Length: 445
Image 1: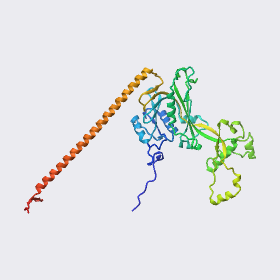
Image 2: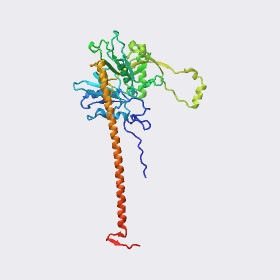
Image 3: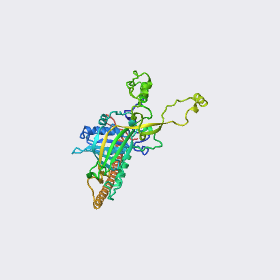
Image 4: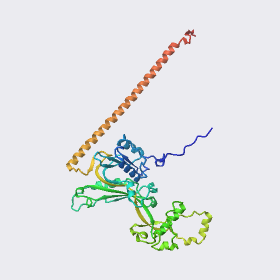
């Protein structure tokens, strides 16, 4: 008999799923997960749909990159599945009847929700077209980006007036954006894993770029960059030679190899400024700003030695010639924009997931008396909701008991009917046997 095949292959993207040993909603999986959703999938337009795809790429790897919405899906469908899937954040893009693009950032399962109006945005393809040297997507999206936040805490006003944006709102917004990505530990996180930067810059109300009418606004500019590094202290010509050597080893395109056929000596290429591709032609090619330089450990590959080679290495004098500690090299850090760009203007903050009490509104302000009335209204709503839940629970328990009691009575009636049928059969069978041709008398005894 042939042996049955054991399936070992999985579907595409199955590595993003959760294992059996660690469920999605367990406390062990603390990494935040998000879902970027189009509300009204066929009504937002192609530009907003592409913006949603770009934002999903920006939120990688902790997001549902292959999510497909339907026109019939509602917000309740996503909030219901957020718990079993371990989703902690919902980013909801929609378009209003007036043509404005809106973004809602909600924390599941209880909120709060930040409402933004997307005043301006640029797609990834537009950003790449505008750049001279763009960077394609590679291994940058295998790890979450580094979150950099600027001006999220505004200084107190000099005239002593209350701030236009409350302090608790600023701290709440800061906490929500910080929870989008897993925290980074400087002691344990390797530098090679940080390949992207997500920059959030808040425009302060006192900024000259904002008009006097927008003093109470909360505007955030979002930028997404890739981190590139290169060695400093080397001229452009030497860097091109190093790159050409890597190209030859990896058997890639050799068009970037410098052409030295017209030169008599390689020194002309390295030192002569008028040579092809130039030597130290300008300060920008050979030197960088000291602020952009960082010192990192040199990533050099080392040969693995066996026992005999290790003993010979220890006995030889070559150990003394090598430095004992790790070598440090200087690298220049450069940011290459990946996109998308967004200018977000906060309009409202709600207590729940896209519903509940309004904690702050840009266009409406309430007095203390109105706030007190609103608190009383919401307290009454909470009490009514709790009362309804209590009544529903009592009804469910009552119906469950009635159903159980009814099943027991029905089961008892069935047993009584079975016993009575059996007794009737026994009384009929006394002194009589049934055959196919008819009843046959059998004498008793």
